[in-house]
Image (tube, rainbow, N blue to C red; front, side):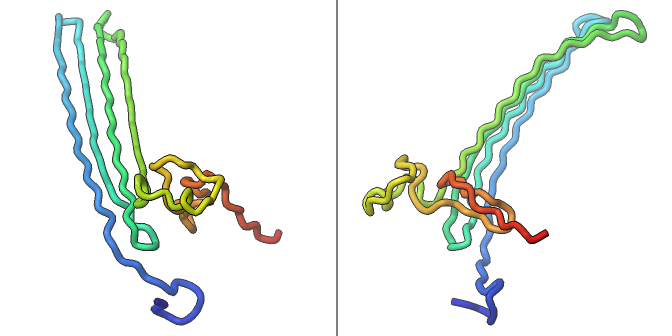
Length: 148
């Protein structure tokens, strides 16, 4: 129901967007000789969240990240140091809809032109003010143009 008169900001939805983030980092530094050193670094992250939509549904999301590096350095002279570093990084983020893996309402109603995978069931996720795309439906929304 409207909570104020007028056409703008006529509804209010108050809710929290919970999120959890776990990080683990391990670093080992070893001096091999007076001139040679090795450094190994591994980092891991695991996260999950739930975003509250404008209609009160919570869209869950989760992800993980892994980063690692191995570095070797050697002092050739007092002012000349040779370094070699190899690193790898991977980040995975999964964002779902409240309706993901639920009922295929579009298919039951005979609506065509939508993805028929269980992860994309439900209405498209559209954001106003900050986004001009509708990611779930993969359809670009028109961008209003102001007169010059």
